[in-house]
Image (cartoon, rainbow, N blue to C red; front, side, top):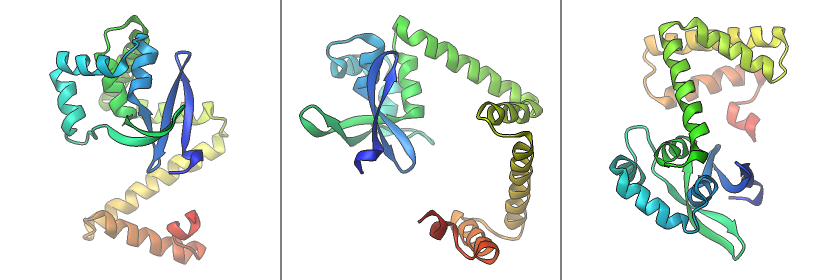
Amino acid sequence: MTEENAKIIAFKGKNVRRVLLNDEWWFVINDVIQSLTDSQDSAQYFKRLKERDPELEKLTDKGGVHFVPPLMLEVDTSGGKQKMYCWNTEGIFRLIQSIPSPKAEPFKRWLAKVGYERVREIEDPELATKRTRELYKAKGYSDGWIEKRLRGITIREELTEEWKDRGARQEKDYEILTAEISKASFGVTPSEYKS
């Protein structure tokens, strides 16, 4: 992990350290707890929180189906680098759900709103497409770019479905096929392009 992979973000006016690991942000659990509770001993707070919420304790100890438990990662501290418990975004959202603090309430309401929106999108998939367009537009992309991007996604889904119908089963199969198309089209594989 390099220095540029470790960042500090403002979280409700408090600093929360995070570390980039495998293209995913991992947040220091004690920093999140400190920012939402003003606890002077966030490690003890977390311990008591797990005692009150057995499901949270299970997730932090063992993870779950598609749910990664916290990891001990090196983080910059005033005393140098130290290993601290960090959790990915999904884990941090689960942690926030367990914190009985008024400061956590806006996050809980936001999570409830996002959950409600996703349920509506399951019922009416056009809402998901509309949301995707709005997100790209908010990021400053032109209508032409958005149309091309959405068409590209559709084409890629059709292609991977065709590969599946023809026997591709493992992730490695898709990687090989994608690399071959990239090499033939652009002269480099995705990994060569990334390097």
